[in-house]
Amino acid sequence: MGWRSVQFVLLGMATVSASFTAHATEDNLWPLYVKKTDSAVGRPDQTNSLGPFISETERDGLNIFSFRPFYTSFVDQETGHHSSYLLYPLVHWRDQGEVNDRGGFRLVQSRDFDSTDNSYTHVFPFYFRNKTGDPEQDYLAFWPFAGTVKNKLWRDEIEFYAWPLYVRTVRDDEIRTHTPYPFIQRLSGPKSSGFGFWPFYGHFEREGDYDKTYALWPFYYNEYFDLEKEVPYQRFGVLPFYTRETAAGLKSETFGWPFFGYTREAAPRKEYWENRYFWPFFVQADGEKRTVNRWMPFYTHETKQNVDKRWYLWPFLKRKTIQEPGYIRDRTSILYFLYREEKLIFADATARKSTLWPLYGYYNNGTGHKQLQVLDPLTAFFPRNEKVRENWTPLFTLYRYDERSGNKRHSLLWDFIVWEKDYTGTQGFYLGPLFQWEAGGQWELLRGLIRRTNEDGGKRTRFFWKKG
Image (tube, rainbow, N blue to C red):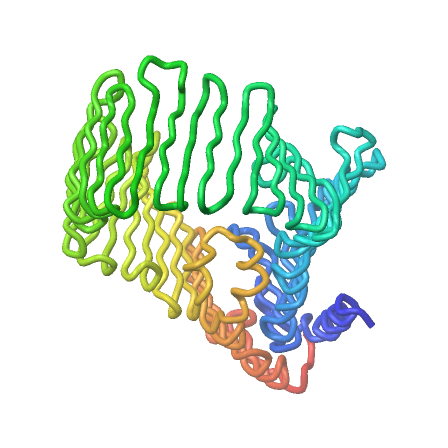
């Protein structure tokens, strides 16, 4: 029996008892079954089984099913497109209509297209295959034995035999041949030439573009770029003693690399100056590009275009403000991830999200939707990852507070204890299937073994699940 079939059996068992509940938005037969139907206040319809382990949610046109932490699926109810994840991010498979792909950790990828025979499969770094019907795009490789891959690692083509004994790469019209890689390299092309015996010596040049030389890499280098310009850009270094960068309107020198130095820029570049007294700790800079006042670890203030960044007692406290069209994004962090808070400040509202790792995560969209979760060890590291939020986060949710459109809901131990209050003052309290209470003094024990109700202005008690 599949896990969806198991869930349907649990739902069926709960339906037998559901007819006795008085509160329409909550049907609690914990731990077998908890159903929340709160679409009137903007909360998605959700059914949970076995605490946090099995759930089904209808939200924003998606059907989301999870058997945590092993399996989660997202199905678009309009198109039927779906994506499924096994122990996310270990394995995934997705059907997006014309395109189907499978893989895991981005190390294993397989994709095919319904309307054609096109497909590709990558098992990094051992196997690469791309089939399109176009010889210019097709490739096949078995690393380290032999093969060709295209449009990878910033190269148009990479060919190898008995890697690293022979490797040939192509980018634009330049060909680099390594025998073996990376020690002996030859550069050839219509405008390019060069030879290198790494790390001892190498010289490579391209007509009108660059001329680069290194010796005892990385200790000595001398490189020229943009050779057709009146003043080419030059990078020169004898590490760790001295480095220099020069170009039209630019001079930058470093002494005792990388600690001490300066940079000066003027027309045709933007005006800018920088002094490095003991980089990266003590730096002063100002100009059209940015300003820096850095005395780490005590205090740092940097501005660049629409970004203002401050450190206090690095790495203890960081503040970062970004001016965006129509709003301001303000971020605060303590010890990087221990505490994080982000605000989006609009003209008429402020949205806020914060985490205190691993104790809680808090969210307020500024228009009436608030949520607090205890514990929350993952949001600090994956703040916008929907798959982590659906597959892993609920396993840690010992307590959750959710407020929408004036409806307030408290949940403890994965809905075993629930207290809810809406904007009309209507309240409900649930202790799983053991005890339920609603405002006005209505309550029931063991789903109707004993039930107290208000009827015709009076109170009435029923026993042994009797209806009527």
